[in-house]
Length: 266
Image (cartoon, rainbow, N blue to C red; front, side):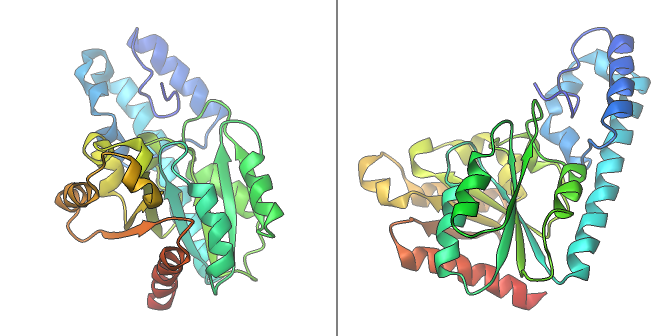
């Protein structure tokens, strides 16, 4: 359960309202947009959660995050840096994609790396010569704007063109937390199997680009990629879609070209 967004509120409303006030006091950096409430629509199936005190506390948390996200975008804009939020389930290939983009991209980038524990992903990127700052979220299943704000102070923005935020592997909460980037890129890998897009529509409605990763494995899986693309476009008709495999350099170049185009259009 995500204790930061409120979906763990299941018992006495006054007790949990108090807990959220304490949480707001100690972690006054958690929040989301109103879309986050939609992402956790099941919360409202519990009549206890319609208590005005609970709704008020959650709304304050959400509003604070949105305000900080706008600040992050202004900060990136002032340095002429494009911010890209990378989201997916665990193991879809976010870090691997970034490692290989470093070999083909004609722009410079750094990474804000989010994981519950360890600095392994940031260490992988650093070994490739990519500046990366690790955020260890502990129990939080997503990054928020306040976490990213702190991390940006550890990133040298003037020398780069793009700052990636590699979010915690999760197809629910990260979809609704505005971290202050300009674009959302969502990865879905062939080994995950069909139905991820249909099961997690909030995530894919937020996507500016959907990357189907590990496509070199298509011959070994019963995976109808064209059907999955159709499902994605029903959710968001104008979404861009690319197929990518780290074994296919041309596919990586197409991802880099998409990012470069977005840079030039700003």
